[in-house]
Image (cartoon, rainbow, N blue to C red; front, side, top):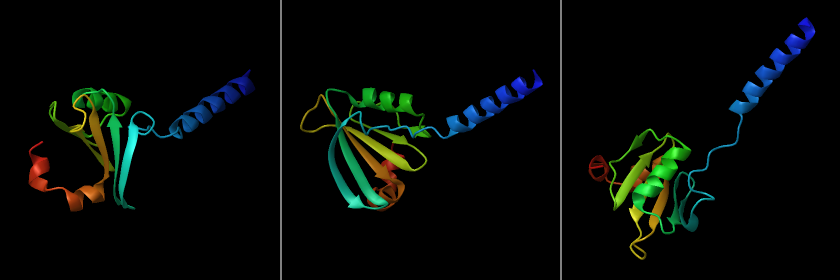
Length: 122
């Protein structure tokens, strides 16, 4: 009996370790249509389109997949979600107002390409 309990305990520990090694959560890839890739390395951005979805709806979907460090106030035109290594800029698609453009930006890209005062407004 003692050997069975020891084996069962080892199994639970192994399952806990494997749970920590689960595959990463994808926030946009596989959910929205890929549009464009700009830049290279850490100075890049990936652009996606969420067809027939509003900015607040896309922000909620993404936040439900993985809780962001910060979320801008709910806005129908533009929102930001901040994660440890990326910033997501969501905005109403100018070519299709029923859809949302999602920019997936590396932190370094944001540092060199966004105005701090602009981001502080959100």
